[in-house]
Length: 353
Ligand code: IPM
Ligand code: MG
Image 1: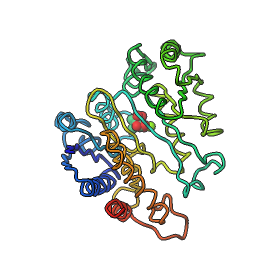
Image 2: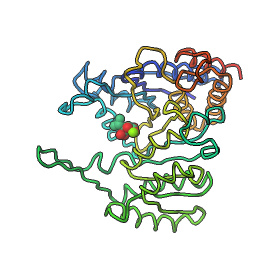
Image 3: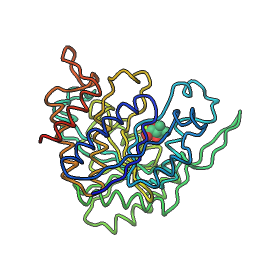
């Protein structure tokens, strides 16, 4: 297969992990006989520095012309420290999602047997946890009407029926090929927008008798996620709740550096780690490239290349088992490997399996 990829390395550790994602993708291409081409484009603080815009038109065009986007991270402390900054790196990510119509963010949460001890939760609680969070990505408070005055400010949590229908459809499609449970997470005891989700949810549930549908308030879901993460199969929720719950979900795996995601919708799909740009680590060759590399596995799988995705996943598992790990997941006293060494090891492993 020929795939043209737009590479958006972004800020902080982004360029370092992006390079490892590319190394592994190229190893897959060599082994399976695919033709990959890459176009790099600016996003986030890097794009603001160069053009004043965190998602320049040229970057949009590179994304629109590609089959997929491999995205890394955006964010810079210069903007975090300044609440008055009107142009922020994160706006680049939001603009990309909106302009590419990426309404569904797929965030799988799984555990790695060799890393169970890293989770702040007990190994017997997290062992076997394996679920997918489906987060609505282009609606809700992130994009609703806003007002920002000195004495009053608001964000509007608006959802329309088609927006709810299409994200629930994604959840049902996942549940049908998994364990058949959809958990709709909302706050229907308080929020009108959540009650629309429930109304549409009841209609969709009737159309999917093969899948069990349950509803859970978001506060309760936050608790169940740490109490009994193995309960969940497919969790679907609105943009803001999904943002919060997926960071919580990431600690089940032990490190934010392990979790990939896919954002899909009407335009070019984007594959990105769920972690941020970790500016303090930039240039130090210590960032964990696994979330980026697993995002590349999701990219291959998106195009039906399941053997390719599986090869990447096996190589990642092998690196963990072999103890070729970055410091965030390496026990104290064990040899430490850099971002580049881990990426190169996995790329080699893909070629040798
Ligand atoms: C995420 C991030 C973004 C979000 C930020 C960087 C705008 O936290 O992808 O989860 O809130 O969506
Ligand atoms: Mg987040």
